[in-house]
Image: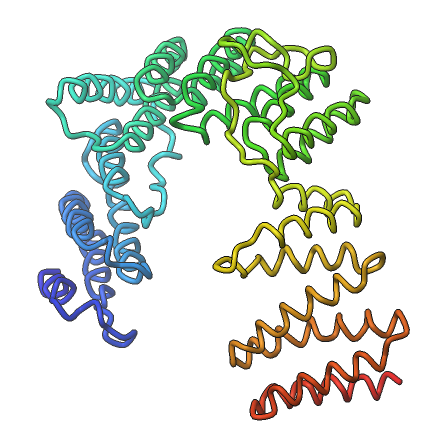
Length: 450
């Protein structure tokens, strides 16, 4: 092990090629031999040392090559743990401490957690964790260093309490943790599992309000739990209000689609759609926001109040052209797509000519039947931009758009225009042999098709 780690920590190690990768297989074989000869306890010290040493270099092991080998060695350690002389709750604590060192998730879960242990052993493990958590609060313990580690410890504690048959302690602990660390999701799920739906909703509301600004991901997760609860109640009107507020809070296509789905269920989509589009076009809100917005509905007379409406919504700069275009594409409205696309083009400065080619291709696909000239112009721009990159892969990508141009021009009776454009591309790029080969294939496919 010492010899391998000297090599791993050498200054030139991280430029290694595959064949120079340090080989831990002999270490693993010796560890298995030690276990087979009846020395499981000695392997526990080796396991801790392995994880401590890997922690020193884990951030440099980008491909996980060393981590994979360490994991194989640790599988032997976990087998030794099950055979060791430690009491069951001591084994659990050892496994937990190793898992907390595993910042990059290289370890397989120890079989120990699935083994049958007595309620008393689970209780003893839970008591140790409670004491360690209290000591950590006083900075007298190093059980965990980060919030994710604390969450993991508490998850193990809750599992232990449940298996020890003292589930009544789970919710009080979860409440304290929600207040200390903001882990409202765990508490809400525990409350729901115990049938305390009303109390769960109260914590959902509290969590969303407290976390929206600083932990938006967790707040959104809580919102989805609330929506699931309302779906079970078939309270579609309330769901529509929640989804509409979420769209106004953070306008994007996925939230627009969710809002649309909910609104259609209650037959209120025209009113809600108009309010949403007005907001994107000119930032006109359907309701004047007072200091306590949560007391009002996002759309008075149409949707109920949810108690979650914020006093300040997402600050947008109207018109939100990108989203308006995406919505028009989603609704297959060629006229609206063209209108907002022309606005987008005119809003671009000379220093910002490059538009998102994927979005432009979607625009062209939507308008090609009603506005073929616009679609062709878009595809020409994309194809010519790809050709200018002078890469074979770019030429192949450009051929996709050239085929679209060809098909569209021929469908409107302008085959000669296509042939003239193809000649123009050839002439402008006559020195690019690979491109000419691709164009020849494109032309040959046309002749064979005829």
